[in-house]
Amino acid sequence: MATPRRLQTERLLLRCWTPADAELLRDSLDRSDAHLRPYIPFMRHEPRTLDETTARLQQIIENFDAGLHFQYAVFDAAESRLLGEVMLIRRDPAAGLELGYWLDVSAQRCGYATEAASALVQLAFHELGVAKLELRCEPENVASGRLAARLEFVLLRTIVGGSTDMRGDPCDLQVWSLDRPRDDC
Image (cartoon, rainbow, N blue to C red; front, side, top):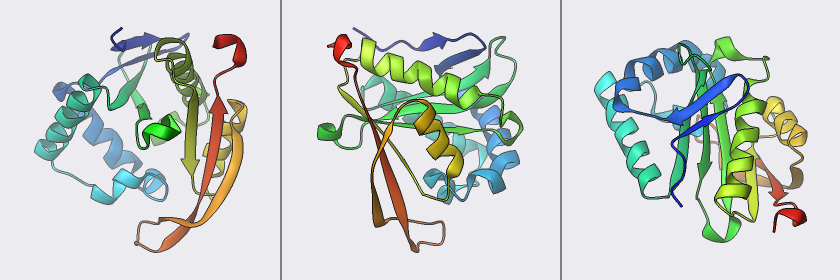
């Protein structure tokens, strides 16, 4: 079964990125740079040019089509406002998929991250047949830790020096895990 390219929630539309989204993405990342940079690893490569952003979106689409990573642009239900991104990333086949997200600075504290991430949890367990999800974040990223807890992820461990910060210095990394409910097997 093909992974759906569009998901609808009560307030949101999650859909595959297209190259035509490059300007929207560029505007959101530029506006949200200071907010995202401390916690989002790909921000190390920002700011990109519009052409580089378009090329990045093309790679995201290719990865989606190949079943490697499933990255969705998060819009309001009318698809008039880009709110962020939510993704399922295949880093280690033995570990299942990793849930990730980011929100535009203007979309904070509205419950959008929880709503979008919850939709991907359902997708992973019910349509993709994934047995386990992980969410990784730095301990200082309190909002992501709260989101993980709201979605009933369990903090497995904190890896001391398990990642690097934006300057390339070692930093700790929390690993949260969520198993598919037994009644879904």
